[in-house]
Image 1 (cartoon, helix red, strand yellow):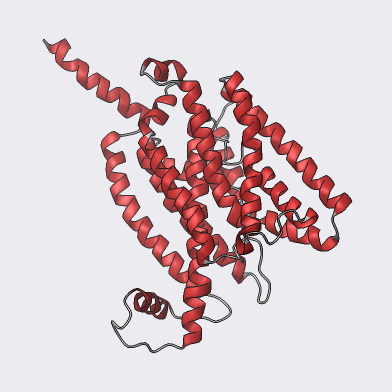
Image 2 (cartoon, rainbow, N blue to C red; image 1 turned 135 degrees about the horizontal axis):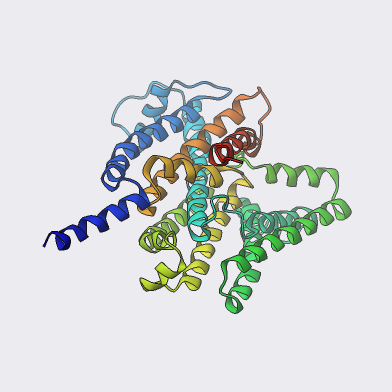
Length: 367
């Protein structure tokens, strides 16, 4: 009787060892997410407040509240300041948050699917394909002006989907994650070479500068009309990924264990990698290539909440949004009259952080 009664307890202990303390993990989600939401709201307010024209944070909240509920109270600010807040800085801050959340979620899913802690959202060549779309538009002029302000993001988004064609073709013949990732690496090199050739042979200095600024990443062209695409993709794909959270967790136990629980591992991996690429394409199309967010943030989220997907991914989304809004603030604060690309800021900060992460992970190994 004693042995039978102890078996359920032993099973619970096994799950606890795999994902960290189950109860404390659940508590940590409810303890961590509300402060992160508050911190994100504060970061967005600071991003709207700071700039060449400084606007008090209290005025920022009042302007936004007045726009949401007109006539609720008398305004004391100028129309120029309201235009700065509503038409310029607020959509930029929200776009930075949406892109940061997208890259962080995509990185978390990519690391879970490949069981590779060094995987990032660009592992299937999305960024190089997006760059190719921008190069074709900028240098060759194909489709220039067709979609108005959406022309450049549309070209980047369509270009980012090109590497996926090769991935899908290989995935249909070889249901193997390694082969798919290798195809992504090959696509990255191929499109990178095509970009370099087109710029050096057919482009001029002005076109080269335009493409390089886009590749460095930034939100200088952000607006309400461009915000809805990455935000919609984030909400739809993020919801789908969370619904498959249990399957992602099963992959962490190994292919045999996931297969035994009824998961078609090869097809599920391909589906998740395609969703990762779609999420990344929506972000890259409006921001350019921004590194390290999708690589580092999932590790920080996992440290805070454990590796269970239903807890890790929402936490990673909030942390990624906060990190990229903060990076955009730093990019605008470097010097007056000049704006540093956001990708440069994330690279300067993310590079040392990445080295520290590797040192912490492997530095204790004994020779």
